[in-house]
Image 1: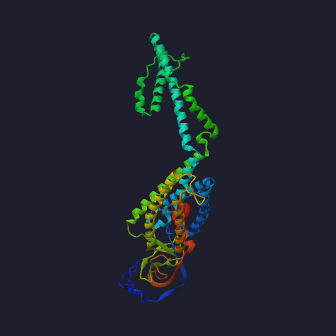
Image 2: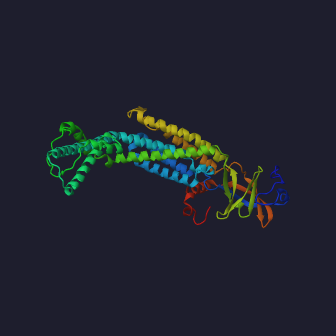
Length: 457
């Protein structure tokens, strides 16, 4: 047998009790035609056709984001939301397994992170959201203060009337009115605490500064003006400014820009969390050994027990009749490389996002270079497009190359009712179809029977 001159004839054939020396002297049958070897669940990179579509969509979007970013706000939010959903699903389905890193690697998140930073910062500035939010908060605080001072003045008049009236020995009517008065006191104390930014405990303790009330307040219709009540001259300017802004742009919560800013900030936080989770998983897997990755072919089924390639690698066959093929586990050289790439590149993308945030905050909105606006997330734009380009190239390469650790010509050891036979076959790549199956299976495996049907993979 000159197929592999390094074979140890005394070694045991996987899944059998026989040694290779007992079978190599027999005939080797040729399998008609060739078959394919495709990645199993989660063993494929994003299919290159998917990557190409993403690139075709992102190129015009990036150009518009640079020139007229206002017109693509909704599209960026929708695209980023879809990305977050898909990556969340990939994380749940794969469980950050090392052999499925090609499915869950978070490298493609960088361009969406930059997009959300741009939308958030520029929308906040264009809509004057910070200034308007401060104005509305000031209006609320002023309203609370005016209510408090009026309430305090009312309590003061009751306290004065209490001194001029005799004590009442009856308890029924007075006790009811006393409870109402006591509620007023507590409300005033709480209002004081809110205006002073006190804690609830301090609010309760502050009630001692108010007078005890034991008399009816129903007849206190005309209240003397307290000197602590703001005059029109004191509050007119703030009130006028607040009214003018409300008439011009309306309440903040009814402004579309406010909700766009909230949405973009929420999505950026979600992306940042996904990046940190992916980085943490990559760091953990980088410390381990090279993962074992499952690859499947129809020629390994139904009677294959072992596969030997031209480099004398011998792999046991795991029969999966529900898939209609057998699978072998090959050292995941590609996966280990992508784990290291995920660890390094994701760390770099986080730095890019920080730099872009500084650019968006510090660079003047009128700054230009060759008529191009400089206040844009350039690091994540170029970095994200570069990552997409590399993913596209490797997606094409992986679709048309066998993985490291297996050769094109293989010997399949088959066991048919204890009759051991050797069959020579040829393995070809699974192409785009194999990548789509492997990646989709990895992405949606968490759906269980909803995705796979009644059988289990």
